[in-house]
Amino acid sequence: MRVLTVNAGSSSLKLSLLAGDDALATEELEVSGDGLDEDRLAAALGGMDGIDAVGHRVVHGGHHLTGPVRIDEGVREQLGRLVDLAPLHQPKSLRALDAVGRALPGVPAVACFDTAFFAGLPAAAATYALPREWRERYGLRRFGFHGLSHAWASARAREIVGGSAGLRVVVAHLGSGCSLSAVVDGRAMDTTMGFTPLEGLVMGTRSGTVDPGLLLWLEEHEGMPPQEVADALEHRSGLLGLCGTADMREVLRRVGKRDADAGLALDTWVHRVVTGVGAMAASAGGLDVLVFTGGVGERAAPVRRLVAARLGFLGVLVDDEANDRADGGADADIGAGAARVLLVRAREDLEIARQVREVLGG
Image 1 (tube, rainbow, N blue to C red):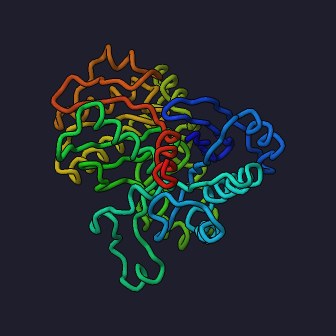
Image 2: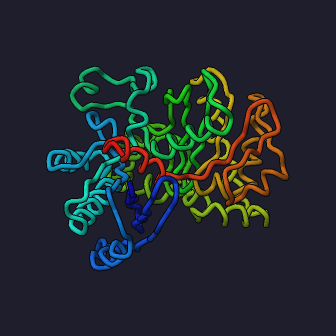
Image 3: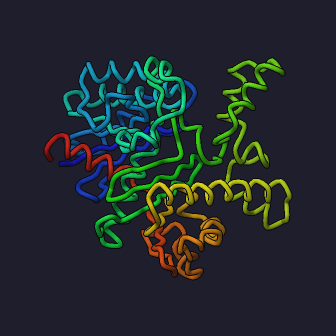
């Protein structure tokens, strides 16, 4: 079965045609403020022969769509009702879903959800300590995100090290968006993102976790409108808010020149990752494997070294030569301590294709 995977990002649409694990064709289309150019999409798809099925990355599945599902009118309607839960991401996924559907009428399509991997979190990890009536009326819980990446990376880790029973894996998905997960025996036990992708680690432009009382103070005492607060948390915080750039490469370059703001940004970012890994290891009951994935996780050897240097108490140690060689390359074992440390390439496309074949029996 040849599966076309569709991954709608903030400024691009990534297409990949896969036969097994082999990429037969790839294309990345720019998405402007006016939306997706459907003529360019049709031209790109016209150059990809033999598409048997389509798999769409969809950010949010809500409470009911907790696994991959074949898309029909009813599913499309459900996805539309979830826009309020992910207003920045869900509309982009739906626009791509509709456009590809028009370009490939009759080709079966499957929605694969970033929230699905965390749908079965233990109740203690999924529950907010909020009034019962709020939780029940509004469906408030910790959903978790980046699930396709975490599912792939944790499964690949089991494959590399040999999946012994009870294997405890912490996955660090580090890029412009950042999240951690605790996975035991292939099951997600905890994660850092919550009701929205804002919770958890410091990111490129997103704040990560902040005291909700701080936000209430800004609204009550400074009269700051909720929309201004939301915009700042999503687009003007994180590394960008700390030092004026969201690009970790630029942060590292400036740290090398002893830029104080960049140094604070890097230290804060690393601090949140390290304390988060400690929390995930606690949720997993220990740590057998630490996985780095995502753009920063795969391509920033100095960052991996800084994180690992503070996790020696968990048995984490990296081999400096292996760590430097691994940047931007194939999956690699870069550890030199009791806990295995792996670099795993983010392959959401392969995870999507696997789920499509599972749903369609291919």
